[in-house]
Image (cartoon, rainbow, N blue to C red; front, side, top):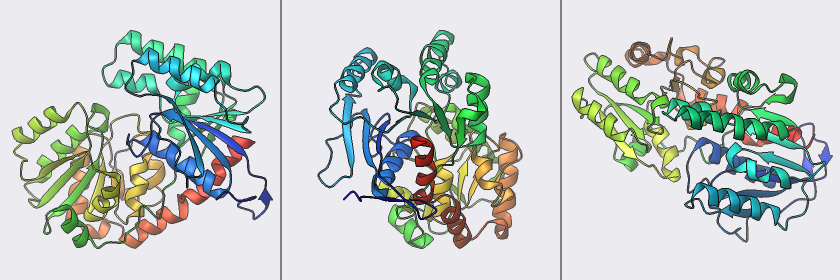
Length: 392
């Protein structure tokens, strides 16, 4: 049910706004940081009282009890040009009332909408990452990378009035690579749903539920199996520490093109008894996996804009080890600098893992992890900051 007023942080009351949010996919079906962020943002805006319409690809019909109106722009399995044309036509023919604010989240599906954006309505782009640079990291051709950056991303960004980034690291990329002025960039961290991610099981209960080993030191890495996520470095680090810590066990959750190569690496390094590939992990099992682990590991090598996984793990009471890449150190440095490796190389990951596993007093407690996440990254607080930028 939509309320007639919205309570701000200073306890003043404002009139609910109509906010149009353009995302990419539908989070429950297409897991990923961007889709999760958009899903959480729109639902928290609606819960706070705003009238929210979410546009995206592959969206289901709006549920009768949902406070978010869903508008499906295209089928995600169509060819690229059909997707873009369908997105353009369906947005232009939309029946929703004119919004008070528009929030774009992905340049590719924002491009076909530019001519249909209503005049006089502020447009905010939430910059989740440099699409062209990510493509280059994964082996995209030079022509493809240039087209994505100049024809798509820069064209969209020129139409936007202001920007939100989740970390200063990505603010720097937006400013330096895309020449967006700093006075248009707002740094607002991501949030975590404290009801969904909470320490409501003991580690032993969580391990039993997932059939994880009960008597080993468990590392958990929920990562897409692509180069920049650094899983190959984590496996190298695991092989280095195995002689001193023979009971270490790593669970990797996620899908991606590197799975065969990573599985071969496990065999070559004789880690079969120390690594398990979980494949796609349903969202309802993710909080359980965090709680089953002694330590979550984020071995990213590049372009990690924020790291929502870091917040989710902390909210579940499990500490996170990260490399000094992107926005992750911005989350962990104020909490526990010991949880950041010296470099992103395998030797540095191995060194810090060895230190933490041999002296577990260096690891923050479950209650401290939970308290830090709840104090600084509660979506109910973050959404008010985002809203202030969207409708300003």
